[in-house]
Length: 140
Image (cartoon, rainbow, N blue to C red; front, side, top):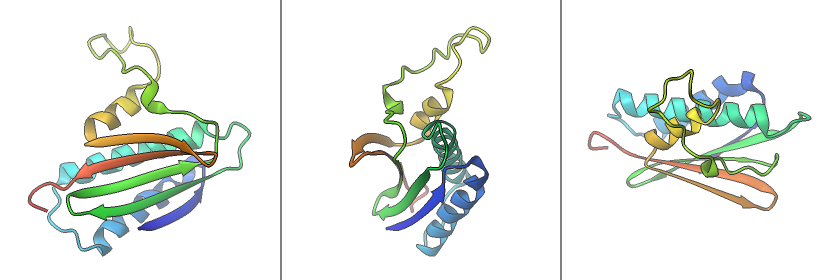
């Protein structure tokens, strides 16, 4: 498992994206299709930015991001010691409504749910832990 601890600041997003990209490359995973990479990057952005914006209302927190590899996929885990919050409990937005008629919020986590093969949340040792799993594609 590879891990990075980073300030919960939106400005640090590029460092997290680079960390995950480097981890995948250094693991020797080749042949991933473009859609796989785009889905991973969008999911990381949505989760990281939400934690950075909402976990620490008074500022000053960190986010731990870890990357693990299994035989059948990629596991990315986000943990923070901010306000306890399970984003998976939020109702999915009604995507049959127009953007103007929909309630604000929830679309990002909904997209992540659609792009990942599995997402879990747990609150443990005063930490929010959100785990994303994406299966390898294209014979990888």
